[in-house]
Image (cartoon, rainbow, N blue to C red):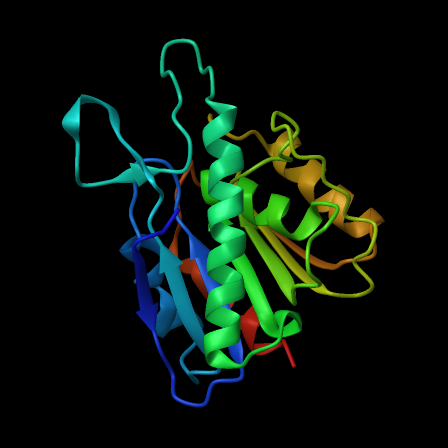
Length: 213
């Protein structure tokens, strides 16, 4: 499966930052923050669009797997397909840029956050450089087992809103606890907000990215 992708290429940047949007958003969503979070242009950013269309013919946004808004039932076959497509995209982009997996960082919001955690935690995952999880929980609903026990000091950033009614504080704290227990160098930030992003959040992300060697 080929993914529509938006790129912000910084000539000679030795790192890649993959940004995975949430349900109903699109590839430009998180990418629009790149000038703020990486002002020194240390990363090239790659932001793919989810392959699953929204219901009712809405073409403005997309998703990574469909969700029945009445029952919250998920199509997990689409989840697996999105994981596979993202793994292929990351491998292709890393090879084209001549950047090793160890310098590829994966971030995502909501659905994108679940995918970012799955990509770094699945059993056969390459040793990616780090993970940034925004307003998401552990991907326990998916048929892809994850194991974060090989963190070995790699950087992780976990952010969420304390007024989020979609992903609760308990769910986000479980992400942070799992990463910390697995040896990830985990930064944790909670904000007085709902299921969204704020400039304050992105300023903290900027500091986290700047701390990466």
